Length: 141
Image 1 (spheres, rainbow, N blue to C red):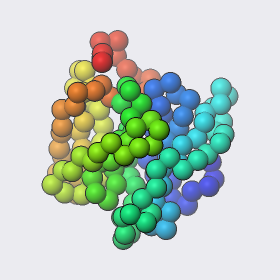
Image 2 (cartoon, rainbow, N blue to C red; image 1 turned 45 degrees about the horizontal axis):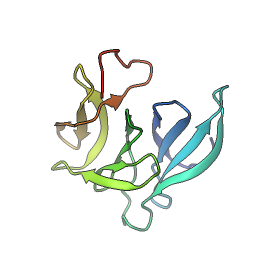
Image 3 (tube, helix red, strand yellow; image 1 turned 60 degrees about the horizontal axis):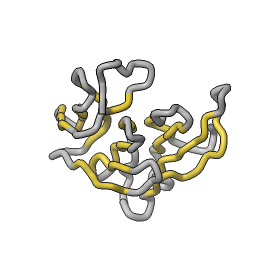
Image 4 (cartoon, rainbow, N blue to C red; image 1 turned 90 degrees about the vertical axis):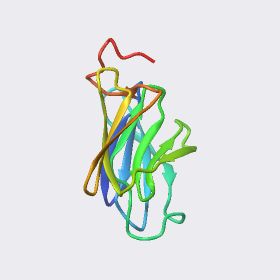
């Protein structure tokens, strides 16, 4: 893909048919979704979620992750935005400081570890995170 000036975080949907790419560009604060063809090439890029007008300033998108239900977790100016597979904003996780990235952890992948400006945080969730190529058989809904 060559349509973003500041591609940053990436994540695959659980069926690995959609690639999400966050953009670090104050003039175009979007998360894009691309169809992934069987040969691995990208097709039909579209804006999945846009905060260009709703979040002023230079802070943009950073890390992106997906849970087993296909919800997207994206580090942005106000915290970690939780987005449905359809791109609807479901809520925001707001640690006490600016977030940069995150990773699923613990044996059941239900803990989201969050890196921030000066700290590391964790939050236990009711959903299992999706980890491509590493999902253990024991991780369940």
